Image 1 (cartoon, helix red, strand yellow):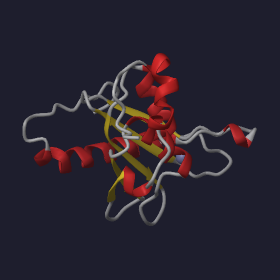
Image 2 (spheres, protein in one colour):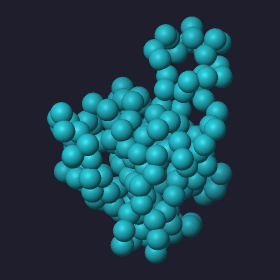
Image 3 (cartoon, rainbow, N blue to C red):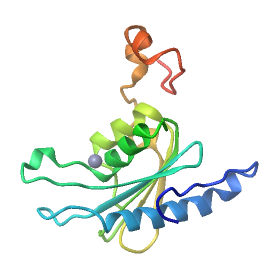
Image 4 (tube, rainbow, N blue to C red):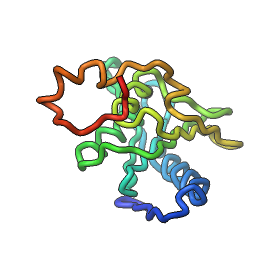
Length: 164
Ligand SMILES: [Zn+2]
């Protein structure tokens, strides 16, 4: 699968989860090869699966002004949102590490904005991947629910997953 990859869901959604996770990881590994990381040399790839079956990719993009560097996960989310996807099933993240790499705190927060309980599949260069629900990686998160009253007019009445 390459650009414009689509996962077709069926009624046996759970049964295809494992396969989907593997596919997402493959896509994340491919994305990592595109990373622009001349300073840290820490290449990360991410692939986020939207509820409509579309997959969006991201890699980290560093900058000579270090603080402007952006993580793979957030780049993938920005791509998805700019293409109209806001509801996510899962994200795969991988880096050239010995064990599974975990998303940084900032990325956990950004993912949580859209899908607080999405699956997060984490992997290193080889070996077993690790999967966890996002709300386990970021418990008691701050979410849109806190701002619902004020934000209602701006983001519309669509129900957010955050229940506060
Ligand atoms: Zn991050």
